[in-house]
Image 1 (cartoon, rainbow, N blue to C red):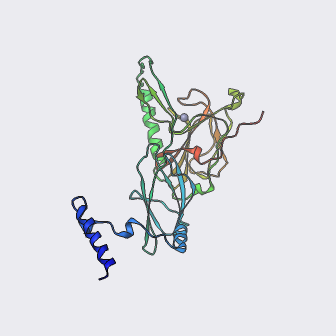
Image 2: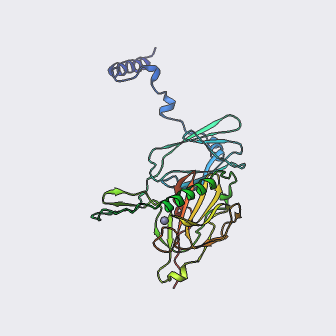
Image 3: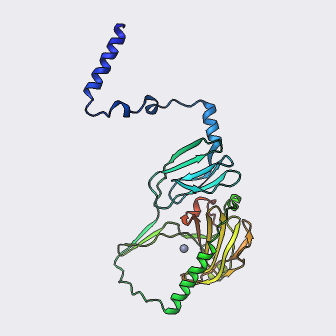
Length: 313
Ligand SMILES: [Zn+2]
């Protein structure tokens, strides 16, 4: 034994004695490799990137992201299986209030797998507080209204009974209508200290200088390709309503339409006119309400489309 080695050994023994009371048993200590992972060789990093990559969208609250993995791979988000198309494309979405990390696991056809921890970026959503309101005098619904609301719910549930696995959404997304964004997705009102349900979609109203009559009936286009699953002229709350199934859990909901120009079962291409903007149902003025759901959770459409550009005067 050299002097140098003996000194090192003594130092090790000393340090393990002095910290023995606070350290876990040696078998539970993390290995050196876990504490300081060696950088992977370039070719390994590149191969991993090709096996699983995010190519669009953002991993943020109310954000959708689009991914590509190897064909045939199985994808799990927080332990739940995610639909993957035959080319390996899939979408992931996170709710408005999601704060905890997500676990993404991909199992490849050769049996190997990859796990990634995704941290969900925080966002600020508009909150408006209104205090000192007189207590609301809620008028109860009539029997007739209640049965209409119940019947509408049946129609909506039936429309969602057979979601499509076809990745129509790969056509990409664009605005269904140009106008002023009057209420953002996720915006919330707190009335007399009582938080209301956050706004599920993006509201598009007329630009300043456009009259009511000019705006009502403006064509509303499919924001992406999809299959129409609901086309109703007069739901109690939503008014003229269209559902478009973009596949793999992605769904557009349009509300308050003045006209519904498509039929359930019809395939519409991105940009195809499906109806006209209006103020039907429980609406305070003409606007298009656009909800974009991912497996039933509202996503923010604004994150997927180009900035809204006002017309030049
Ligand atoms: Zn709305």
